[in-house]
Image (cartoon, rainbow, N blue to C red; front, side, top):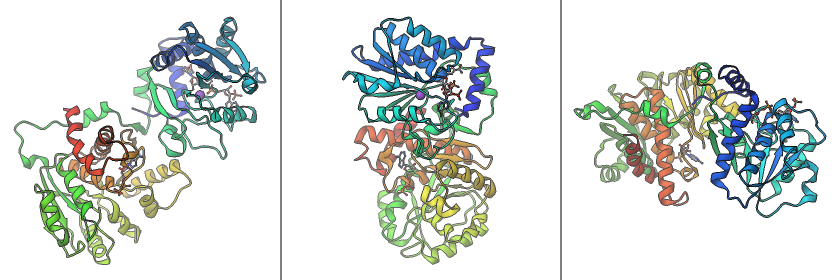
Length: 498
Ligand SMILES: NC(=O)C1=CN([C@@H]2O[C@H](COP(=O)(O)OP(=O)(O)OC[C@H]3O[C@@H](n4cnc5c(N)ncnc54)[C@H](OP(=O)(O)O)[C@@H]3O)[C@@H](O)[C@H]2O)[C@@H](O)CC1
Ligand SMILES: Nc1ncnc2c1ncn2[C@@H]1O[C@H](COP(=O)(O)OP(=O)(O)O)[C@@H](O)[C@H]1O
Ligand SMILES: [K+]
């Protein structure tokens, strides 16, 4: 699914209005009806809705929603900024309609303290949407601060007020702290970054019938990975296939005390479809690996750390988990990088070794995939002010070095040398445990070996990994789930694709 900027969303609204055609007031009504349906399915009629409306079309949505909820039998109060009488046309019409209903009281933002809300209240934030264009002024800032201190359920319409759709926060910006965000048609970039996404609570993207023609034709470099895309990437196994059709994967990993990393990566490769799987590990891990991954072939290199790297051109190599940063490992790894030309997958200590001498970055084979977490990324490419800037730096570096960057996070981003960005929305905080990254390296390497393109392998890999994490959390809880549970759940994830 494409992600658009605030301006592109405005253009999409306008295009829909002109070409469906539909009047702006009807489009607002359609958006509000969609929210009302969601609310009706999630709250019972004893709830009392306190709807806070701004002066633009986000406010118009709020007025319209308040009226629809009232007609459905909910108790509703509306709050406005009496000091600001400059309304958008749609907001003005909808406020007028509200004033005609005697059962809905209209109060000023200032009155919330005098009123005191019923225990069964639900707060609805319809103050600012994608039209926010500057820092919030003091009166609205005070309102949002007060609302954030109340413990009632909080719903934001389209976007939590105070967030920009497509960029980071202004300094000292106050943002409505939603439990649920009901957003129209598209994911917004700010929902997907940690500094801004934390204000959104659970995100629900509601389809409001904006023009498919506009959506198809409008260019964007930013995407959310959705299941439709994954179904297009996934290739079911041919009945007449044999192991040779599914590639050779070699995991180069492990050192004394970190053989578990090699085990996790190798198992993950085995469980994500690799035809023939090898593990190149130091001798100290030989028995462990042979015992827990009998399907893998083990190549021993060095005693306690890997001392030489394979150069088989028909294998796809995934290098790094638990590799250690011994100078001997580094020397032979750098030698290998200088001579090897096929795409590889690099993670963890492979990246830490490169960070010690970043001149070697230009020797990473073209079309390779690197999977840094934010700290590893910083060691490689330097620090940035926030995750929005980090992403833009990653796009620059991806192009410069001709490599795919999997920037691991709550919403991991896959960045391609062609400058595309794919945000992953599977996965959960139960995966925030040492070992989860090793599993990801195994999955992506195995997919690349099976002849998925680097873009497909990275996008499909992060989605599979996160989905397996979601299944594992459901079964075991986020606290108790282990990275090895991700591997065990891969089978159930493939089953939903078949
Ligand atoms: N277009 C459509 O048909 C559809 C649109 N939809 C809905 O419309 C929303 C977008 O509406 P929008 O563009 O009117 O902007 P919105 O978010 O309400 O804010 C603008 C208002 O806020 C004001 N303002 C801005 N910054 C401010 C600040 N810092 N401090 C104080 N004031 C500030 C600004 O004032 P101005 O800059 O004009 O002085 C203006 O009054 C979108 O999120 C979705 O909910 C859906 O119904 C689908 C159909
Ligand atoms: N809160 C979270 N939500 C979703 N995914 C997460 C979360 N925390 C961690 N992950 C995922 O788990 C993996 C952790 O990788 P990494 O930081 O390299 O860990 P390690 O090297 O210790 O295995 C990444 O794929 C990351 O996206
Ligand atoms: K809002």
